[in-house]
Amino acid sequence: MNKTSNAYVLVFAVAVCVVMSTALALTANALRPAQEAAAEFDRQKNVMLAAGLIRDGDRRPRAELEQLYAQRVAPRVVDTRTGEVVDGKGPKDVEGLNKAAAKADKADAHRYRTVEIVKDEAGKLAVIVLPISGRGLWSTLYGYLALEADGDHVRGITFYKHGETPGLGGEVENPQWTALWQGKRILGEGGQLESVTVKKGKVDPSRAEEKAHFVDGLSGATITSNGVTEFVRADLRAFQPYLARVTKS
View 1 (tube, rainbow, N blue to C red):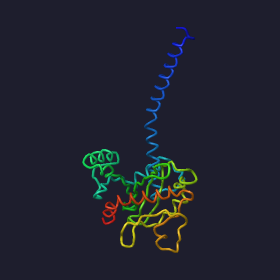
View 2: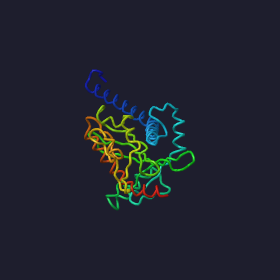
View 3: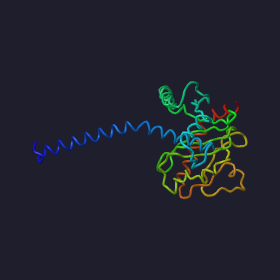
View 4: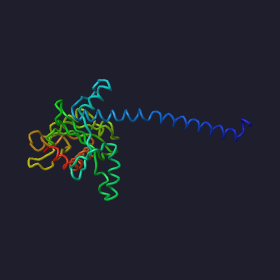
């Protein structure tokens, strides 16, 4: 074949594309297990950060942290309608459970969700870690909200995935800001859900309501702040039947 012909150039280009795309596909498939394992480890760390089992910047080996998670944290699949734990089911079953539920009622597309139970060294319930997610300004934010065993006081909060603006809405992952959530209450004096509000501006500690249920706003990120307020309240509302059950047991 004439190497200067258009046909030769076209065949050569197609061959190179096929070889490269095949190599990339094989590489991606080979790396997928490692990538999934890394993503799961990052998720576990965020659960433990929210629960106070580890601190930000913990330098312990990965194997040690994975062992800590396995020893102290246990996932539970919850029916958010009834608050009951679904026995014999794990996180990998949630998608199938929700698909089946949605066939009967589209409103049940997110009926089943996974919570993380953290036990103390004596094996007693210490922390309840709830998944939280919702819209900010530019993206959907994903994180965890940890509650004390009383189902009222906040132990901690983390955000592990979002696309908010660095230095503005991206400050949701700043440890100095997330630390403001510690000790806040999600229930009112009558036991009703109050949640936690991200205030525009600074919290006034002289006002009992703000001291108990508000945190400082994110400077220059009003929409992100409002989004966090809204989806945290919505997720807490969804988990109320479960929290009522687990805190009474």
